[in-house]
Amino acid sequence: MLKTKIAGIGMYVPQHIVTNNDLLKYMDTSDEWIKERTGIKERRFAHRTEETTTTMGVEAAKIAIQNAGIAPQDIDFIIFATLSPDYYFPGCGVLVQRAMKMKEIGALDVRNQCSGFVYAISVGDQFIKSGMYKNILVIGSEKHSFGLDFSTRGRNISVIFGDGAGAVVLQPTTKENQGILSTHLHSDGESAEILAMYNPGTHANHWLPQKLADFNEAEIGDMFMSNSMVDKAQNFPFMDGQSVFKKAVIKLPEVVIESLNANGYKASDINMLIPHQANLRISQYVQHQLGLRDDQVYNNIQRYGNTTAASIPLALCEAWKEGKVKEGDLVCLASFGSGFTWAAALLKW
Ligand code: UT7
Image 1 (cartoon, helix red, strand yellow):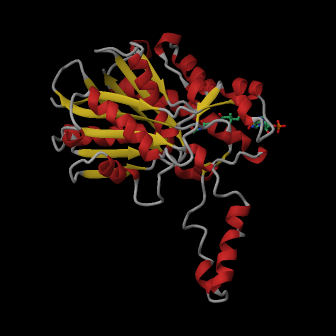
Image 2 (cartoon, rainbow, N blue to C red; image 1 turned 135 degrees about the vertical axis):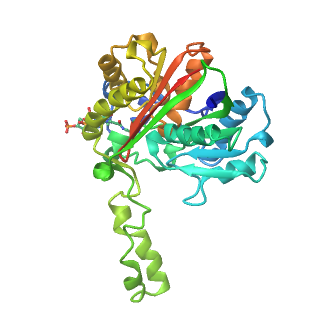
Image 3 (cartoon, rainbow, N blue to C red; image 1 turned 90 degrees about the vertical axis):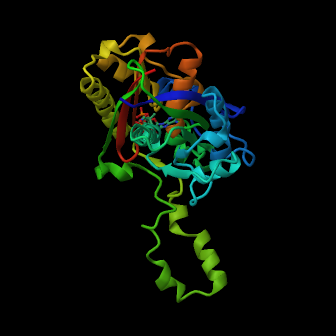
């Protein structure tokens, strides 16, 4: 039976390291608070103009493609997961197609925030299993630093996030002890607004046509600048951290167990769990719930912060490079985030 394997993996993080102490210049926080509540010691911030979500994704993709032993022109589909795209539209997928001089292939953007990479893997898996595509490039990339509130008002969010990118190449395999065994996708939109960035969003602008009639051109400019959506910081991400935390520690173990049950495995069979890197305390709680040893869970949030769609491929790539993910290993990718959405992929490396 045709299955999907990860044939190549790559990652890219910006060179610029921002420590917790660096953030003290902008907000009322402390190294102790950030380390104790999140485990984060430092994160990377992209160059303000030269690095974008797409350019970082392309750098990760080049390595993944090289590791797969193919050329960019061999890729027959692109899936790009991000919540921080270069443009509101078009998506980053087409920018990758252009930058890497690929054929006129399909390019799909996935908007599932922290679960984006696992959702993207799941979509790619279906295309590979059906025989439609043979070399799919999946990228998770984020440039959070462009749009965080670095004043004390935004400290519960801005200390968490970092920039970076990871990529994989998916290919078919017929080997029995290799490939994606199953993927499990979930959502619950009831809490959509407790971890969200409201603007730019079409929910906000229904006042515009009526007002337009009353203002001249110069006043319209002013109106945009002093618009309440900016005053209320609705163009920055909002998070009710405690509510997200409480849901994450329930849904993450649940979806891992769901993926194990679907394939006749137990938690102790996992060689490596790669949880979304949202908060080290969440990962440790999940590890404890599942009864896993330290060497069965990979965390790198300490060095990169929360990189949303990039966090799982970054952690998977580092685990692989360190020899902690080897051929035949049972690997579980598990995510939870805005939406809420949560997901898992169980695979044999
Ligand atoms: O990746 C997407 C999914 N996201 C997550 O899974 C994140 C889940 N949530 C979390 O990781 C945690 O809730 C946070 C790390 C965001 C916050 O930690 P917390 O332990 O839940 O803190 P809190 O929001 O309850 O705030 C506790 C206190 C407050 O002060 P008072 O009201 O007790 O005086 C905050 O104002 O800590 C204060 N605080 C800070 N203090 C110093 C909040 N942020 C900071 C900060 N530095 N950066």
